[in-house]
Image (cartoon, rainbow, N blue to C red; front, side):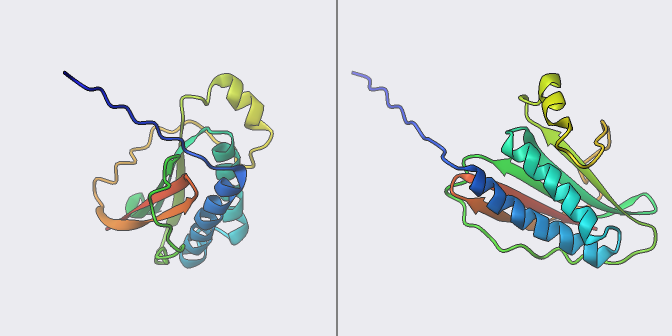
Length: 166
């Protein structure tokens, strides 16, 4: 006689959980801005604002931030949304004191969930502070080396940060 076993998991999180996680991401963005000099803290806050708007609406899949100098990637982080992150342990923001380099440029690329339809884009357009455009940039960081990361978690909502270095 065969038995069938099933399991059900319910991921629970609130808007406050998303805010808690994005607050940690924002702290990283401000550290990156401050250490590289490529953005002001106010510019980093604008990116964090849009990340939060998209995350709260369920439209954000990941955020990739790359430090480039004269077109070459030097460092990168990717924050991947995890809506079943309850088993992860949260980390403190940090570890992103990146160097000041000549010709420094910070590139931010967002990836969206399938729910981010053209109607969804219209609905959130007025809430976003950055003029986002379509990008076809390579975010594989093939010329960089993976160097760990951190987890930012609140209940079942989280973002797993993956780091790359030259």
